[in-house]
Image: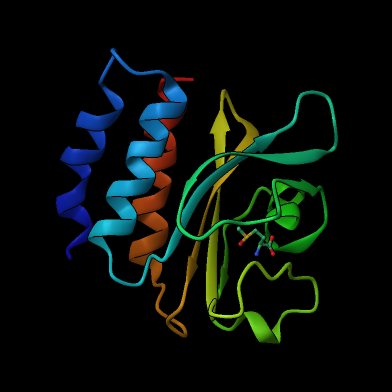
Amino acid sequence: MELESLKPKVLELLANNEKSATERMHDVCGLLKESVDYYDWVGFYFKNGDKEELKLRTYVGAHTDHEIIPFGKGICGQVALSNQNFVVPDVQAQDNYIACSINVKSEIVIPLFKDGENIGQIDIDSDTPDPFSSEDERFLEFVNQEVAKIL
Ligand code: SME
């Protein structure tokens, strides 16, 4: 699946004013998971109010126990502090990693900025080793920019 070809569909889902922002984000998670064979879990985490932690807002994929992630913990918690994309080709090589499923081999987390502030992130787990490229980063940056517009 060409990631570029998914952009119009992402825009269409996010433009659906009959649904809440969370529902639209959930639809985007579903689109990405169904369309990209190496996207096995797709979710959005956001800063939990004034707390120094992330809260899972919506996702598609296997159940996770990690609804709350303190800043600094795991890949997600590190991105909350670094404001940088984090591409993990091999999760087993990471010391600061929170395992959600034994099937997961790799992960990508891209921060989501609203008015220049890192307010959340898209997190994707893959059961495929080392599948993510700069194309995924650019595409997911696009997704986050568009999500920010409806928040
Ligand atoms: N693996 C993540 C935790 C979230 S799950 O992937 C859904 C991490 O290390 O932050």
